[in-house]
Image 1: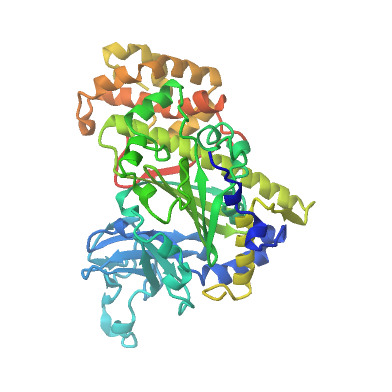
Image 2: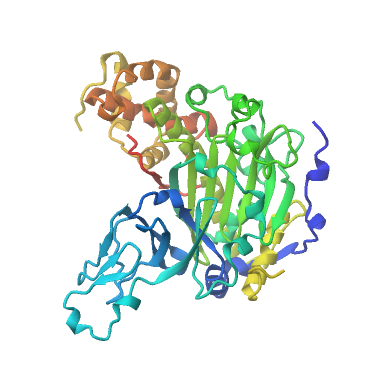
Length: 413
Length: 115
């Protein structure tokens, strides 16, 4: 194995300060309100994938707890994907009550105002009693929407300060053509935890904890001898977004009977398919923006999209994590495990359920630690937490977090 | 609760039917795992894990979308091992360390109805 130390990006290599960060950022209601206004109402927020609404008339409803927003995302007859606030123009009812479906119109269950799939208002019962309502301008309230690599992003500003490509700041170019669409099937795992959302953001931005907290789960599979603190390699940053390369142990060979049986049916999302790699058909492994160092024991590229997303392209799919603040001390984690296809046999259903349980348990470890961290923060004995030289992405996130709170960040240097 | 019988050659799983046979979601199985003792999880694992191939060779004969009652019950019991094996093969204890108890997690297979 070549010496990797020169690729272990340190905070000083990136000119990052923030070695001590106030606990107040994680415990104060005032900071949470500023995050709502200055980050979540300004940044582009990822909310799903276009393949969740593949056909005209398809719709999904998403609630974004941070902004208390209920959002309807639809694909129109014209094929265009649009987003609207889920609120009737008459008396405000969140009229679309199913989480997903296919329809050409939405009818409010209160007084039967009817909207088309493109959000326009089509009918008002007893219309003569609403002479002041201009139907042409009284559709569902639209939300700015754009897509990248099949991911749907929303922007809740009146007018976005930057376009989505400007916001992504080159991350989109590095990952141009990455084959996310090859992995359309997903299992969604959601949980709410009593902790600040940034505790989880930070957990996904360093590998230092993996050998300790994930000692029984991830460590045997991913922490290599030559990098015992799982330092991220080749850290790249694009505005407030980043990517770092993470290794794994290709000789990991579980011997326990149930896990061995699962591996023989269908490789877990994270396990390298050696034959596919050798034949050049291993999905993300072939992409030039991923594993730029060409390390032979490549595990994943951990990609962070500001403010609240982590994506990990893996051998047989990818993991998508999203962290939504609900208050300064409570948050929702959503994890999606993306695979090539739904189970085709009951063997595959068992294998995917097993991988689901294993993936969930790793996230439960992170969430458990983030909750303990919050208890410690709120106890009040410490005014600051410390970020090491080996935690550059935590410092970078904090730097950009502060910039956003000050009204900067969106496309500005 | 009364159950249909398991397929005859899998009668050795009968002691585990009451524990796992009525559970229909991964979250129910995850919570059951947290409630059981490590000894109970190990007994289930010891009985089933070495015989998974035998179980699925049998289940393979049926249409996954129209399993007979006995095979559907068998499959539900077997899916319990996806959770029990985490306790036995990974953690050496029923619960994820430091996690709240009882702990529930929503898990949705989008566009697929798992058993």
